[in-house]
Structures are given as structure tokens and as C-alpha cells.
Image (cartoon, rainbow, N blue to C red):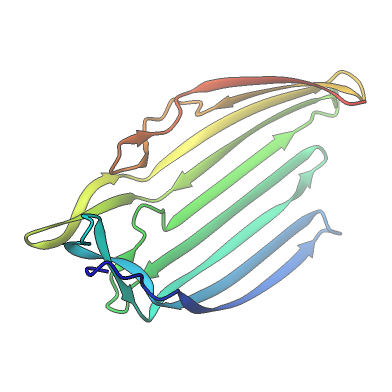
Length: 206
């Protein structure tokens, strides 16, 4: 804290309830979960105040809440066609309703599908998309807390191909960030994600 003393340890409770199901003789599986975490003594930056050593000072915040849910679906939609997807919502707020952890996306969506043709079963082609909502960093000035740097919502597309030469030898080729999306992973430090890149791996199993 502002005096240089350590804050008390975090304490909290977590509640979660969920459902799982399967359809079409187990070919399609799904799950949904809803959760809430309540924490006391959560370390929150104390405005522009610093410790005696010059580091940022923190205060212990009580009654903070993290609420959210997640949904996942996976399975075989047709012979040789597989799909996996999911959506997650997670938001943490102070006792005053102020959003915490703004550098983490509140909403995320992932979808990946792959297909192996009947006429060429050794070949697998696939692709996926990862999407996340806006993130931003905050800073204090004379008027209080404000947005500092924002990264708008974005989506990344990845593609893959795999070929089985035999039961032991396979070749995989993965194209990450296929459309060469330009984005920040950490807004305040201007840390950027990887540009479009190609990865290939030859695998042999003994």
C-alpha cells in the first residue's frame, strides 16, 4: 500500500454449475457452464499514489465479482468432417461496478473444422478462426482513471493441412494469421502479435 506495507492475502469463493450432453450416438458433444467468483482483498492500483520506494501503490478491494459463462460444441458432423467451437464471456468488476482486468478480452469465440475426403483419407484439410472483443489499458491523470491505449476487437484465421504417408510418418503444414492481421496483445506496451507465418513439421512415430 501507500505506506509500503503488504496487503492481506486474497480470499474468495467460487460457484459454478454446468451441463453436458451428447447427440447422434455420441457424434456431437456439448457443454455449458455458468460461474461466479467473489474475492476480498483484491489488489487494485491506488490512483497516482506510490510506495516509499517509488513503485505504484495498491489498495485491497473487497466484494469484487467475476461473472461469466462458457459454451463448447465438438463432434463429427458427417463422415470425415469434424468441428470444434466455443464461446466464453468473463467480466470482473469492483464493488462499485468498475470493470477490472481491461487488458483481457471479455468475449472470445473459437471455431475450428477439418475434413478428410473419402477418396483421399490420408489427407486432412482444416481451418479455424479465433475472435476476441476489445481490450484496453487504463491510466490515471488529474481527472481520474481513463482509457489509455485501445485494441479493437479482431479475428485471426489459421489454416492447416496434414498428410499421412503411412501409420508412422506424417507431414503437417500450418499457416498462422493467414490474412496477416495487425494487432496488439498488450495495449500499453505496444506488444504486437505474430505476423503471418508458415509452420511445417515432419513426424515419425516409432
